[in-house]
Length: 457
Image 1 (tube, one colour):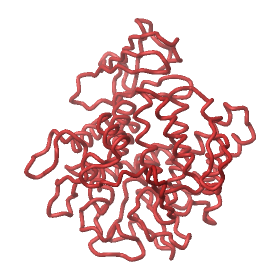
Image 2 (tube, rainbow, N blue to C red):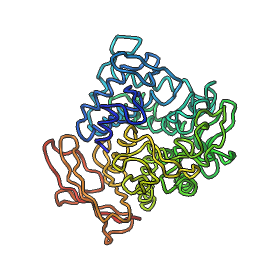
Image 3 (cartoon, rainbow, N blue to C red):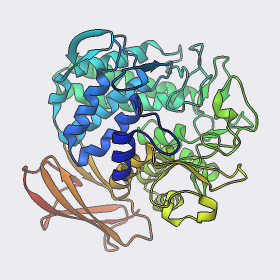
């Protein structure tokens, strides 16, 4: 997965289904996270490059071509926030706050300013584009480009973007606390609290979170809808960013299992749209079951594995991992390379259910690597150390990984131990039992043998 992400997404920026060579603002920022466990300085370089492709009002190019610097401005509402997301991921991995002082210009202002100012401009733009109910507008798409007409009048709201923003507000409240800015930290924490309250007041549909409102006020991803009744990302990110209370988190994941898990992976939505809907956008113009319209969009399917791991549901982790594993496919049905992830696989509403497409050039390659490391094997970097919380598939006897981290190396072995109490994790570092499951940073240049023993709840 790392090779695919580096070669096709970062260096080549092309594949069999797309030959553009452009940098996507959200795309290559996410892809650059693959460097965090290899050479974090390369992720830092990517962050700086993208900061320099932001306008002074906080908006960004959706994509741009190097050399010519020709770029495309859209009303996409998530692009600009990935700068904050990946910067926070860099600090969490490295512990290095100095990146916030790195300087870059704006596209329309050549005077370089600190990276933290670029991040703040992005947040401020999103804060200005918020509905009276306290939910962010969806604009011309919010990661899901196919929702291209939902909010062109800046009235439609996005539940997924609200989940995403809530997570970022919490992370940056933490970061500002660590950089000696208590007032800004408190402001972001208060904004998160208000946003989470608004989501849970307005966006719960009874058994899951609806996905968005149209400019005209109608919903998508709601039980009110005959088609597109439930969307995956509105459930998984409610879990990943701790937006959903425990009962709703359990209900949302139960709805995912009931409505969205297929032999090909987690579907992006169901049931697929069977006719174009002008007010929603081009997602409805794909044939039913293809790509975002009721297919497995692998990028989002990896996030479903994260949510299953966080929910401590090993059976669902195994089911979702196996479903997107290209080495397990029937080649006559799959019709794609068995050694790289595809961008999508046709869902059950397609007559070609199980057919893969858009191979090599997919952002899911980096994400699958990260998801398996952090939420399946359960080795996750946090602000003050490395957290161990595995959720191995039942068929795995154990796993071993070599994990570079802040100049040290962790030789990690994860095994199940039936002698432990259910839901217990025991961590030994060089033979000494660790108090809790968080390992503080080690001296650079050292190697530690870490044994993680656990018993699922």
